[in-house]
Length: 119
Image 1: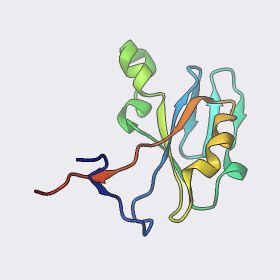
Image 2 (image 1 turned 90 degrees about the vertical axis):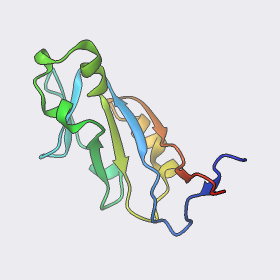
Image 3 (image 1 turned 60 degrees about the vertical axis):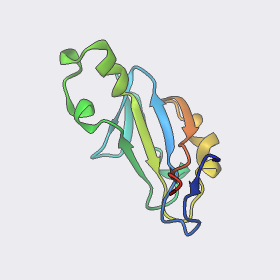
């Protein structure tokens, strides 16, 4: 059996996100759609992404929680986010730009989704 056993559809209905990890002193303001550092620096990614892109936390409940009430591991988890691109856009096209953001520690193309082979 090869991996992926059943590849994802090529019609763009399953989108591959960009996975990113924020620098430890940054967070994303979901209402204003800007990244903010603890020192007050802000960064807007608006010009680097196509219209219709979304930036979301992987664990939204942790992102909304008071950081002082979280364990070390929970604070680490709250640094992980995804950039969801509009249908038809390719994650690799935007990887270099996302990696260059001052708020980003690391960014990767998300994993390829597949279905198990039916027997």
